[in-house]
Image 1 (cartoon, helix red, strand yellow):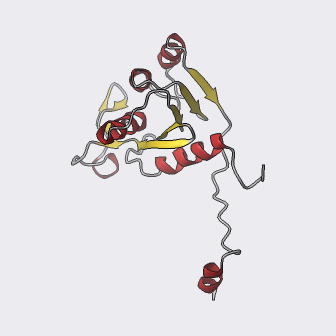
Image 2 (spheres, helix red, strand yellow; image 1 turned 30 degrees about the vertical axis):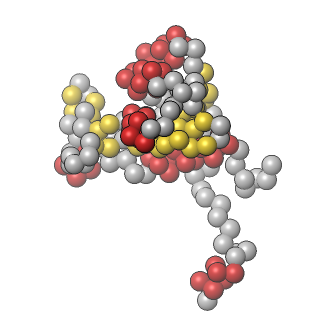
Length: 162
């Protein structure tokens, strides 16, 4: 495989990283990509409910050391599937961070069969729930965060450089 062409795992994790850039809570930027059969079902990032202020604009709402203003990336990805009538049964979740307890329960209930992450979170209950549900957690190294887009081989790019 070409060094510039990422594996499927790296590709989906890099997409989760890109999705996380839309997050609106400064405490943690997290992205989630739900995938089945190498096809993207949905994406999600942590942010406020529709119509509410964003943490980055009005501040976080902290309860027990957690921001309760935001919906987590995993929940948003599942909810996008729900809104659009897309089944999550048997899908994999590519997530920038280990899911929290509530998100792990939602992923399990949504029929997610595999979790792929590169960053851990301090929640051991999530691991226990995934083990009970017989869901594999694969921890990979963080993918390179650069995008290898080769403009030099396209004529339109040569025109832009002029």
